[in-house]
Image 1: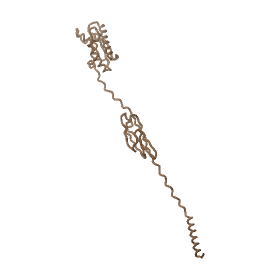
Image 2: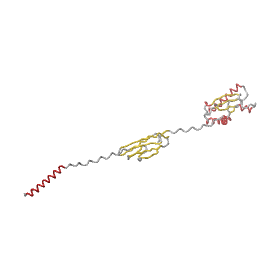
Image 3: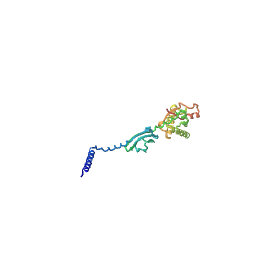
Image 4: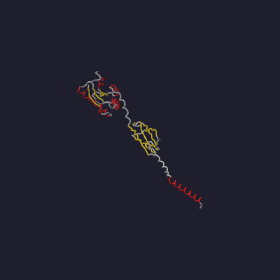
Length: 247
């Protein structure tokens, strides 16, 4: 090999060695780090309220709700609902409404209670007009007796029947049954006869359905005559059982 060729080979070898040496001295570059993991999905939020919170049976309340980060929202007793809204409800008993919001980040819930109370009782009816003695006497007429008798006649029986109808429709009334006689006979005899007349009238009222506890009897005999003339037409007015309000 001639000298020129040797020189060329030598220079090529030297250059290759220099390149290899330079390559070995270069610093290696690290690969780039991997990207960070994505953040977790946000957790759902939920709120639920009722207005008013207390109602009477038959009334309504309004539910109001709001949610975020949820894809499925439902309210027990209502069903699936939108992310926010309102709904009228009319529970018949006290009810707690439960809202559940679900999403990729989990679930959240909220509750609202509507208390149901019974309606107040209706006001009592107005009291009937006060019964006066005049009103009573217009509807409960006296019954009359024959001389020396305490048996109610057939004519007087209809009067007693009309009186019973009135007393049955006014069950709160208490009645004084007073027996009277005409002027003939002794005071003692007429007191006894007047009592028999009062008792007979009371017995007929009781048989017709009037509670005996509502009736009280008394005899005035001939002490308080309704007519003072000394003749039969007057005496007939005094032979009676008279009814009045008993306080």
